[in-house]
Image 1 (cartoon, protein in one colour):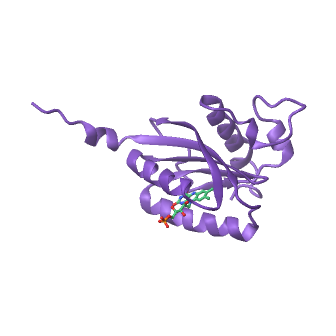
Image 2 (cartoon, protein in one colour; image 1 turned 180 degrees about the vertical axis):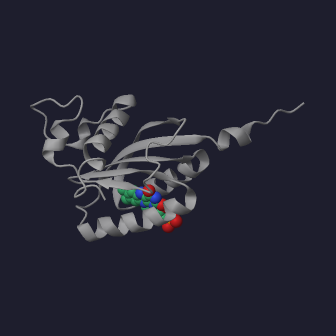
Image 3 (cartoon, protein in one colour; image 1 turned 90 degrees about the vertical axis):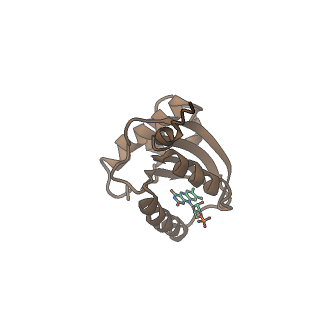
Length: 156
Ligand SMILES: Cc1cc2nc3c(=O)[nH]c(=O)nc-3n(C[C@H](O)[C@H](O)[C@H](O)COP(=O)(O)O)c2cc1C
């Protein structure tokens, strides 16, 4: 007997968090172009998540059906608008963290970054405080609580 449960696994919800560096400082117009097409495609593919941009650094969480997330990250890795794409967390999840967001977007300021877990007073405000694994994911969730919920100016 052949047991194939790959269908069930493939349908499972999957989450990925990566950090990367823009190849040039993104203008507002470039960022809104990127977001417009990303959100349109994400709605089509059942992808939700959040993108953070601070001083040429990107941090993004993507959630959706596993194979769809993998295909998207493969696309994103090839995108010439950024480099050094570093997946800092990935794994199956029970439910979405960004159900309402085809791609939430925040631009934290230095004060927001200083309030992140693990940030030392001597650190330069940067998303590079993000560490691998679960702590990296926690940084993103903290930014979500600080910014997506409370500040409509910076959360689009
Ligand atoms: C920082 C960053 C984040 C991105 N996020 C998404 C996203 O959430 N969804 C998406 O469809 N494309 C996103 N893109 C764009 C993809 O890299 C790619 O251009 C898009 O999937 C279209 O690929 P295609 O032309 O091969 O279909 C992002 C690009 C960058 C640089």
